[in-house]
Length: 174
Image 1 (cartoon, rainbow, N blue to C red):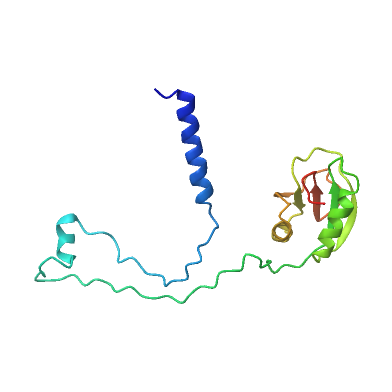
Image 2 (cartoon, rainbow, N blue to C red; image 1 turned 90 degrees about the horizontal axis):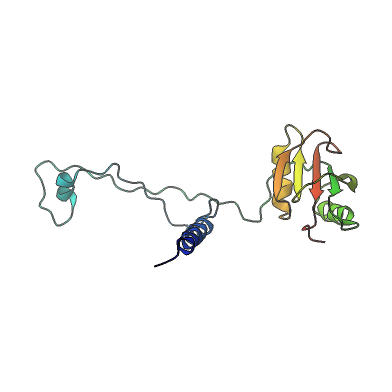
């Protein structure tokens, strides 16, 4: 008999594996034509009349022919969203001396102007970009360009700087 804890662990591992393998947002590279489904299924007694081995009926139901659609260009995985890059305040929320300056240099080399560099004394768990109202798309573009940014959130009261503020933590690559 399998211990209950082992059975539960095995189920959790299978579920996690399925979630990882079926993540939304991943696209296949198959660029084949799109085919439209012919519509709802017919009941079993009628569906036999539409199979190739069945005898033709007196009033055959026309089957819609699949049609081809124009291929849709998928955006490149490295393509950056087209947004205006606004000034960014970069704050260090770690014990790594000079981390905000190194992160600001990386952000600046990516084409983002730097407004201010400093330290944040609060407690932020992971590197996060905070945005002012109306700047969510710009904040997501910054996060897309720098994978070390793990969250994009609205600004909160008491956060130094204005507009976009990037708070970097110890996992930021130096």
